[in-house]
Length: 282
Image (cartoon, rainbow, N blue to C red; front, side, top):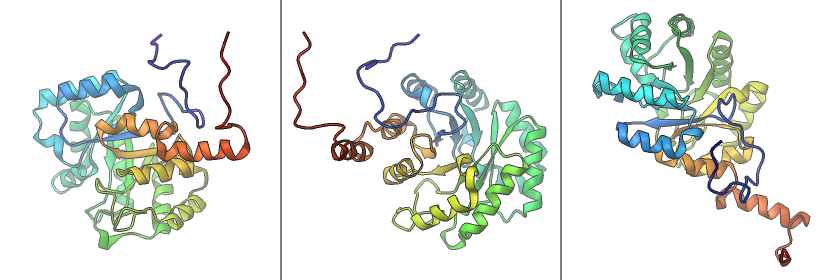
């Protein structure tokens, strides 16, 4: 057994955190060009806290095949689900049948694919066939709902309908579009603030299936919102690889942003007295 640096001294001050392999509370990393050595370093420090590793948009196209396969093997050793960004699939659909794309992704060593229509107008019946195409290729389908263009944002009700359909058709989880900027798309306004009423509506419409959602939340304020709203085991995506431990600290109440509410409650209820002096252990 590995002994953690602060084992039996410091623990989470929030609810219990799930461990890998996680069904809820996934952290999805957004990688736009980490090398093997840098990836190895990130995994050494934060591997147990990464569940999904997305090769953002079309970045994997510019990597040598052997190098990409080596990196995918490394991530698989750490039990991390890997997939190329959904935009790459959309580009491939302009020239190929989805079977061509799925077969090549599988051969490269990806374990999953992201299926999106953030740019292309893909009809729902065809989206269902693409999900089936991924399953037939032995890949895990992870869908993304929402549009990348701030001027083409779907309604919350439409988003909920698509999430439920995707899950019914075989998607393992559904990512809610937030882009890498977290501004002006999905449930975010132009400044990156979360539109709370839209989140509440999604909770109402999705019911228990809300646990299958991964919220793209690149900004710390967004991560804090969802952790406070749904608890430590909420799915968060588009996390920078070098911010994985910082997000895990947020989840566990080990940063000001999520510790302050816990500490305020403990003081208010009398469970912790700031004026009490620790007794010497003799």
